[in-house]
Length: 104
Image (cartoon, rainbow, N blue to C red; front, side):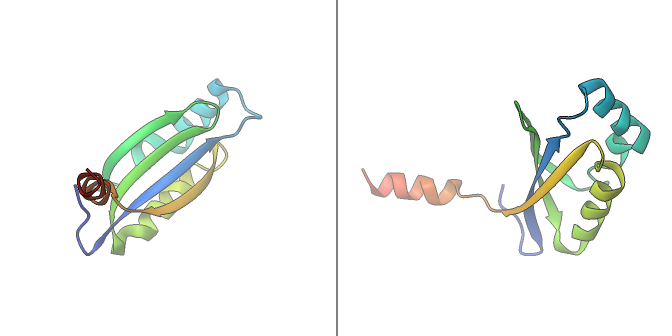
């Protein structure tokens, strides 16, 4: 699904704090309300994967005007359990498919 003109795709790396055992990470997330607060309501989850040895990789479809809400949810609920990285993302699939078809 392609983002609208007023939306962005945002990929968030939630890198596990490797100094903490998983039980402690999960407790921290429970204590901060992470599962209730992230992502904010009505922000679409495009994908959410575990990357073994790293943590979790989440791609969200975010209306541009709500980007701050996503950032605040991370700051309030994820820090301490994860270190974070954010990347603006776009769907390259249609371009790759077009390029592959043209290469035949």
